[in-house]
Length: 107
Length: 115
Image (cartoon, rainbow over all chains, first blue to last red; front, side, top):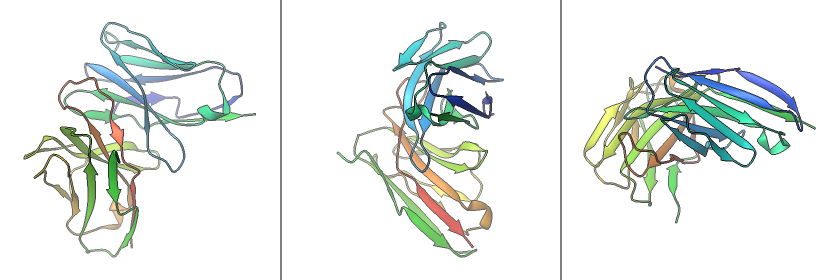
């Protein structure tokens, strides 16, 4: 079963913050986050492991709550370059992705 | 070091034709997988392999075959193409399969249209 992402789309002004959520009905071992620019391949951002670990990449960070089977991606002080579609992937023996969240950052 | 190479980049087929999408990697990754991407559906796993000689089904395997005779190559075969298989196909690899915490590396994709 695909993890569920919310929101499906978000529009920001430069400098604003955003949160993207990812939830699963199955127990999670780890959560992956990827970003895809239009017409390009997805690019790896970070992996989160059990234990509520938070990781960061530029001004993008994420958390993972395995009890709630949820992960959240936090984008602070967004830049134009953050525009794209963000995917969470849940790791069992294989990597299953959510449907994506389209993020648009406007000047 | 090319990483993950997919060929062709674009292809147009007629309904009923067969085709093989190629995926090759030079990173000695054990785990390879195929996804299709359709608007609003995200990336859906078709088939995956945890090593040479081992393949398994993903979320949407019907209409597709795979084999893994070498570590480097993981071709995806469409036996009898249908318009519903029009999509962008991505090959992705990572060092090992199972519950491994390694990033997945994607190829540039194959854009396939079936008329």
